[in-house]
Length: 285
Image 1 (cartoon, rainbow, N blue to C red):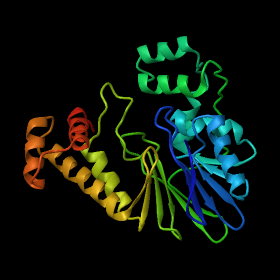
Image 2 (image 1 turned 60 degrees about the horizontal axis):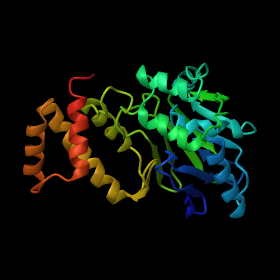
Image 3 (image 1 turned 180 degrees about the horizontal axis):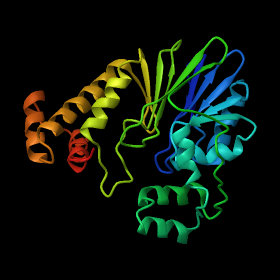
Image 4 (image 1 turned 180 degrees about the vertical axis):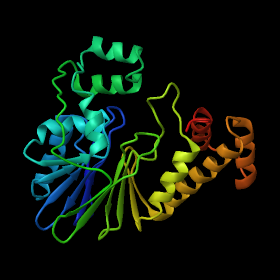
């Protein structure tokens, strides 16, 4: 069951649902504007959020910002056409490619077969929408290229296009007054490749960018809100593995052995998965 949680009076978030791939949705409450971070994976998803906001006495949002083009972050936008919607130029360009698509079973199956869509997302779409696939792609009304700062009244949100393996258009949202960094999916693997993968170069570049934000709380869209200490632990694992991927490209055994030697223990399941991602991404620019 999803819950709307108050991290602080100015930042709220709704918990994710793994089964139907509902990500965390953020709410930034200012004196003059309220901003949603991401539009949800369906009208039902974002309507659940709006209902929970009303129950908590929060004003209806006036703005919504998208972190990237993937369906689970944009399909709720059709229920928010009264809001000003914001995205990077690249996100809008990628969304435009979705406009001709049909979403019935046959169309999903054909795109999976053609490797345009992935089975995981096709199944989540079926579970979220059932047989009534009435979703429509609504394009954002305002775009930016690199950075956009929003003044919501007493609180600001800095939208920064950072890219990454998961989606080249990935945007993070930083709330300086709250010291919160909404990561979106930026640090996740590329799921639309023939095998799920991460590249060392993109990971190291992205981690360097994220280090510039002075945050105490970090929001993983398909995970949870974590402390700076917890994020830095994950960051350091990613950085160490990315460096090993450069030293031993494509060599899973050597990466694993060297990592275990450095940390003084066997790799855990999550670390082994990350090693596999870096091996799959070896040699990609």
